[in-house]
Image (tube, rainbow, N blue to C red; front, side, top):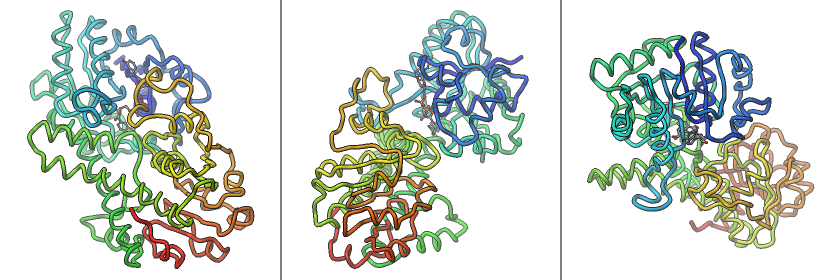
Length: 480
Ligand code: NAI
């Protein structure tokens, strides 16, 4: 029986390994992590991450050929294939701070593998890493090898949170990069055989190591760039009376462009897009390509602009101040169908509103109060580092309250900001919300989920990203 061990039981390691276990009953899969609480949660009925369909998959294989353990060294020593899916955050200090990937967790995992391995291993980069990381990992492993042969593969993960299980069941492609040597090709084939249990052969792409590493960074940069492109157009739509949904639809009809990922919003979030683009920018700079670096940096600048443009719109619409006003925030996760708040635009929007002394009341169906308070107390980039580097007792931000109901959040509020596209926000009783709000009552729809005309008929002043403005909003222009 082939044995797989995955280091890192996070948003990627957990779901990917659960699906491998489900699809390959003949393979034993152990997911290990240094976080005892995370492993305990994977072994309980309350999994540590919310992902539609994940519970079912885990229930079917846990205890059969899928195991979660803190016994990192034992399982690494026993494995034939070791996936490394640890976090690769942006460096917060030292050389490349604010841009470069922090490979501390990766390096310590590699050193541990070298330390405990007594049989040949295939080590798979599952984390998103800078191009050429495999070379560094290879050096650590071979220089510390106890007579063991290592093959390093790059197998970046393309799943999207919220649809992870679907994406893993039917991936657009699986990418495997390896050394162009007979041993390298054999290792690529071994991993290919694992995926071939359920992924059609023509969807399994093989490349050299550097192409695989760079493809992941490039794919995320392209995806984020699409969002920044449509968001940039959304600002122009508001200024001209065009409607971004109509423009995006017309643009997306071009088969060279395609209709997906063209929704204007308050901005992209999530643990990957910003981190990976910053990493790309840093790599370009290190390779003497400042023009290319600046090109990609703009994608992040537009995203930051979109978030501050939203905050400015809220403040300017409400007579240029939100001081002492209650603002309801509906949605805190970075997208629907996940409880993940890493780099969610809601953090920047809330901090912007708090900076203008608003009092905010937040509701999200999947995010706990503790998480929200921690996020609002944290410095940029600290979220992806271990707990001991984060504020130990998250400072209670006094003007923030967290509710478990959208109606409670909006009660007595002057304005409602919709920051995540949860389906339930489309179905709310907005008449009831309006009746319990201060007047004039505002809705700022950062995800274009509500029917603005219906809400206007109730009496709301409505701002929808990239849509023609109400006369009220036209009279109170936001200065970004
Ligand atoms: P995560 O933070 O949810 O999980 C990483 C886990 O690794 C944590 O539980 C941490 O305790 C553990 N860990 C760190 N060092 C360790 C060590 N030395 N030994 C054992 N466990 C260790 O991160 P996530 O979201 O799963 O991301 C992992 C990687 O995958 C990152 O490089 C990310 O860029 C990439 N990725 C993430 C995607 C996502 O949607 N979240 C999608 C595709 C790639």
